[in-house]
Image (tube, rainbow, N blue to C red):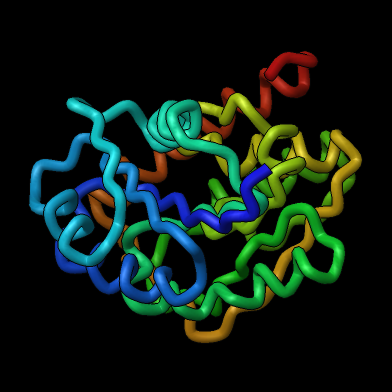
Length: 223
């Protein structure tokens, strides 16, 4: 197997953030691949100019399906870093996730500092309770999209769950496969906040729906 380390970056309408994100990640990995899920702005061109390979969808497919389709087209790597395009330059702080893999973890999940803005925490708590109920694993950051995985772990959690159910499903599938999953505090890590407004609640509604489906399928024994 190739001993590459690849960052796979999910992005939609992240112009202004994706360039600094790509630049930061290039210092951590061998290759950065941005998966542009139907952006309507300059996300793809900015990512290319910053040194990333770009894979675009003609229309939004949802995070999980967009990443899964990208993975089907990419060659194997020894380690993978999943990251969100709205991290901007703070993506440079994700190095400790690889340190966790070096210490024997199969999946390392970044924990953000306490947020100054956001929702009511209902979706996050529901995801955490679902993970604990199905696996016994206590997840303090169940929705974090910033994850380092070994090749073995990535194979164990595919196909990736659709939409925003991706992270919750990934944690469940990895724990059930007997893999070591750890959470890593990453001081200074930051992404674009969602607020308690119409747009924010709509986003969390989609999140909750996707996570609920992922949990229900796994409770019934399906993937």
